[in-house]
Every structure is written in structure tokens, then in C-alpha cells.
Length: 76
Image (cartoon, rainbow, N blue to C red; front, side, top):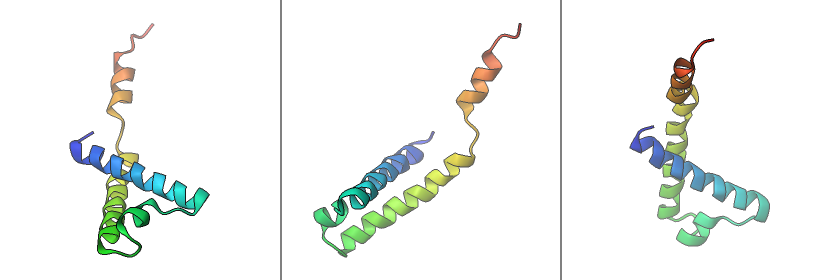
């Protein structure tokens, strides 16, 4: 996993936590910190959205660890 994918994953997790707070407690953490509808809030939402799109590629990328583990297993 590249550095960009790791950063995108962090932003996606932050976005998921924010959506959980909205869903369970009707509390928007990003809006509480940066202001409702502010330019900075919209930038944060945009970054989280782009991070989600980057992580979408991880769904279709074959796992190198799974491939390595199946190759390393001795056959009996």
C-alpha cells in the first residue's frame, strides 16, 4: 500500500467516524470544528470524498499478501 493510499485511508476513517457521529448522535464533528457550510468544512468534505475514491481502487486490487501466502505454503 502506497503512502497516498494510507493517507487516503486515514481520511476515509475520519469521514466514517464523522458519519457515525451524525447517524447516532446528530453531531457533525467537522461542522462543529470548522463551522457549518464554511469553505474549510467543504474542503474537508471534498478531501474525504477524494480519499474514498482513492480507496475504491483497493477493493479491486489483488492482495499481495494473500498471493504470497498461497505461494509459500508447502504442498503435501
